[in-house]
Image (cartoon, rainbow, N blue to C red; front, side):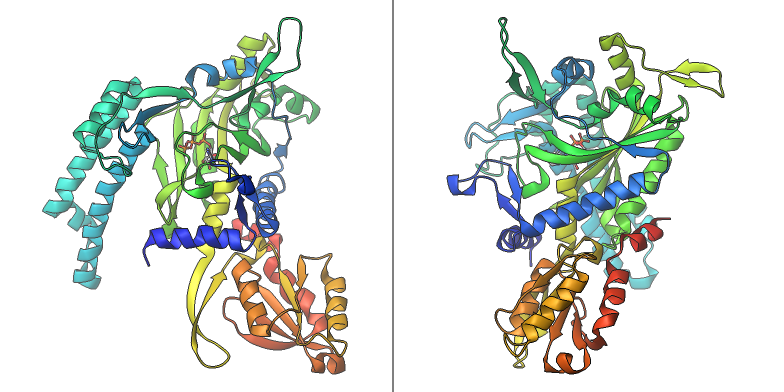
Amino acid sequence: MAQEDIFKKLVAHCKEYGFVFQSSEIYDGLGAVYDYGQNGVELKNNIKKYWWDSMVLLHENVVGIDSAIFMHPTIWKASGHVDAFNDPLIDNKDSKKRYRADVLIEEQLAKIEDKINKEVEKAAKRFGDAFDEKQFRETNARVLENQQKWDALHNRFAKALNDGNLEELRQIIVDEEIACPVSGTRNWTEVRQFNLMFATEMGSTADGALKVYLRPETAQGIFVNYLNVQKTGRMKIPFGIAQIGKAFRNEIVARQFIFRMREFEQMEMQFFVKPGTELEWFEQWKETRMKWHQALGFGSENYRFHVHEKLAHYANAAVDVEFKFPFGFKEVEGIHSRTNFDLSQHQEYSGKKIQYFDPELGESYVPYVVETSIGVDRMFLQVVSASYHEEEVISANGEKDTRVVMKLPPVLAPVKLAVLPLVKKDGLPEKAREIIDSLKFDFNCQYDEKDSIGKRYRRMDAIGTPFCVTIDHQTLEDNTVTIRYRDTMEQDRVGIDKLLGIISEEVSFKKMFTNLK
Ligand code: ATP
């Protein structure tokens, strides 16, 4: 099945099974804003716990905070967001659709890359074990030609971005003959800059209300609390401050479901270090974060680092962690060496000294910062797209059937255990409730007595429940149940007293964290 179709199915599945709903749906929705349903919120909370604990439990020098969404408006002046938080936009005059010029060019680069990869894949199949990919890439005429095209386009694009040259960005789109996906025409407007911050008003005074912004990133809440945390926590450099919270961006091109939203959530950690050591820490955090992603078991081939074409005004190194979504490799996390830009700016704009006295050096300095910044919603999309599977199975009556199963890492699954009485009588429901009562403080359990056992299993597969247990008449006699494993669909007869051990072992965060070491 084409990747696009799979993605459409995934979006429909997320709605049907209570993971993600369009916001304000009964009013026809609000663009690029989404709500999480009963299963979505559990999965999202588990993702947040996985991140939070991996930061603050596993690193004794990382602590958390929760800062307000509203902040003093001067903060956004100091950070550069008022003047420089812009996207280059271009409109197609026929479809009236608006695009990010940089994204159109990035997609063009990805197309060339795809051509090269297809050529390599074809050759790998043809030559089998004898295939030498490096040699092929260096000698095959078609690959070389496309590689040259890619390099030339990439260099031109990077230069245009770095120079802030909007005319050149437009010229690239024209020269590359990039067409609007909707109208199919190349009738483009000029490229313009657009600020992504949402503004609103706070209070009212004789002189009018104060213009405040909905924060476009959580990072600044960490920077302006640097001194508070360092002093009250008696933190010694190097140390980190982590935060999870909402962020808002007036995204123009809001597509691909929860990949790009106008209200979203970030998990950010700012790590404060001694000047001159930041690039070492940058490398270390790159490795730590990649391990964190890969520990979920979605396959290391589905991740890569992408080095930024253009460094933000504050950064001296930056890389994205990209995941292979159904619509291609895209950013899920950014790791940035932000220098001492933010703290220096806040020092200047606030007039307060923001420094660290280093007892080893016997001097004070403005710390440098390495940031790891990941979107909760993009991470959610990574998890559901990697977990969604359609499988051919043989149903109970011997016919071929398809089951949709979310092979979520058990630790993240919204429901860990479903307890299913075979029939709704003879004391089986009561026995099922008894089991739930004994396990519900350990993990999320769900009771289901409606429909045939087969249908109930399918419902649980669809939301990714790793374990189902069925209560039958034998259970009343010998306290054993049938446990069914989601991925293999295998079934075992086990004592009720064994359930806690079997399930805890699989759904434990501890096990995940041990893997990270
Ligand atoms: P992009 O290039 O995709 O716009 P970005 O580089 O501006 O993203 P950052 O400012 O580095 O993103 O934000 C850090 C993380 O926050 C991103 O890696 C992403 O996971 C998440 N994020 C950013 N913007 C959005 C959004 N509009 N919707 C959902 N998640 C987002």
